[in-house]
Image (cartoon, rainbow, N blue to C red):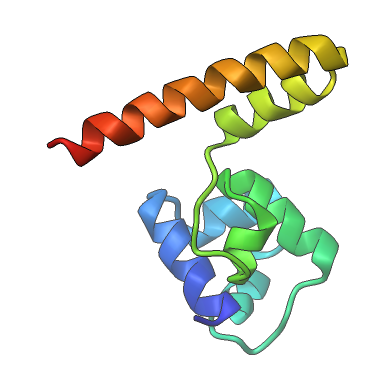
Length: 109
């Protein structure tokens, strides 16, 4: 899927108008329209700014991944990465157990 198509879909899913998104990203709405119609390609910096406004990862916006990452989960991962190694190890061990439990529960449904 192209950048313009994905941008349009995500913008509509978030129920935000072109003019509102453009204003929040600091560009003219005509420019955003050109991005959506694939008449122009944004810089990496502008694409990142648009992704931030929409609350999606840049990888998701540009189509590098089809998995929309939850920002609150990403924030928790960043927090975990900043912890001492021993704390990270304990948290990851607990998470592994919880994930396995969830997978097992889903498999039995």
